Length: 257
Picture (tube, helix red, strand yellow):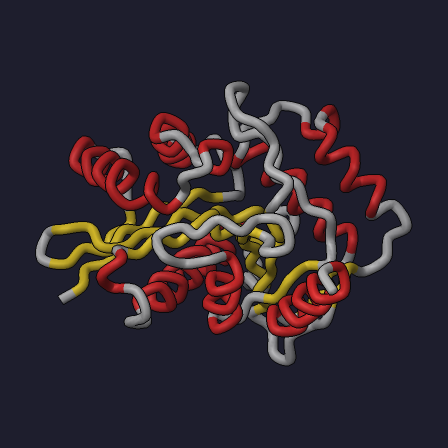
């Protein structure tokens, strides 16, 4: 029997979060610049509990089996763009390829959809995510290479956003990460083939301001470059993961005859 548990700021939940962070999360993010600290996770939960996120939200959902955490996810809802960000989904190595990751995502869609309706009166219709770009990052993490992880995310409905994404530094002690792809999952049917530039820029601003805790996103190189790239107001295309990987493979073949 699996128990899905949404964490609060209680002492018991803090201990569950510590165990999850140290045992599952850290091993899923060996690159220190991609990894959120336990202190920041707890601070975000506290900010949510105090109402400091306004009409946005921050959620942590853990999955327990026989009292042991076997999976978890962290995600945010941003009201200005009416979009969510799935920061990560981590699943115990012994339970991969069982569909548990998809169940965690479905539960988070429900949680954030409820937040969207309650906090901003909107129907959530767009989710973002991040993944390593196999064109410039080849490390295998827990037995999964970047291309395999991307294919798994495609089964969850994610597509590649045609945008030069750079994750800003998560803290003063970390560096920006430029080997990630920005992904998007539409909850609309039929799914659109692009994202309006103003909506994407609004999402990036709130992500930096609320999730990364940057006081003035406009002062960062990452936001300034995004603003410049999206200045003409065009919509940003979405590409299927299969299309992206095929193009990446063709590029490697062309550059390595």
